[in-house]
Image 1 (cartoon, helix red, strand yellow):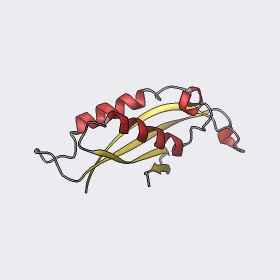
Image 2 (tube, rainbow, N blue to C red; image 1 turned 90 degrees about the horizontal axis):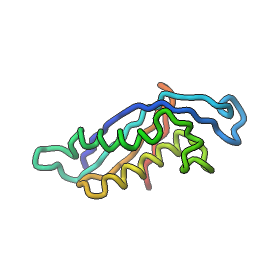
Image 3 (tube, rainbow, N blue to C red; image 1 turned 90 degrees about the vertical axis):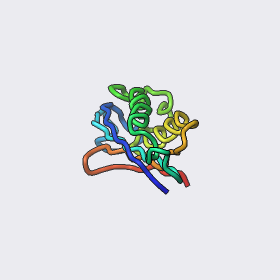
Length: 123
C-alpha cells in the first residue's frame, strides 16, 4: 500500500457548545490539515496521485472553512466544530471529490495548534 500526503492551512473561528472552559468562548485557530491518499499500485508515472491534483481538491474543500465562523457552517450547526469533527468532514468531502480517482482517502489529520491534533481514519 502506498500513501501520499498533502497539507494545507486555513484560519477560522469557532466555539464549543456545552464545553466548560476557555474553548466555550469564541476563539480562532490557524488550522493545518493533512490528507493521506492511498493506492495499491502506482500510476504509470510512479505516483499515487499527482500532488497538484490532490492540492487542488484540498484547497477547494478548505475554502469552505477558511475565514469563516465554523459554527455557522451547516455541517457544524448541531455538531461541535472540534478538530475530530473537522477531520471527518474533510475526509468525507475529499472522498466525494476523488470518487473517480485511482486512490482513496486513507486518513485526515487536523492540527488545531502546533502541539494538538486529531486524526480521522474509517474503521
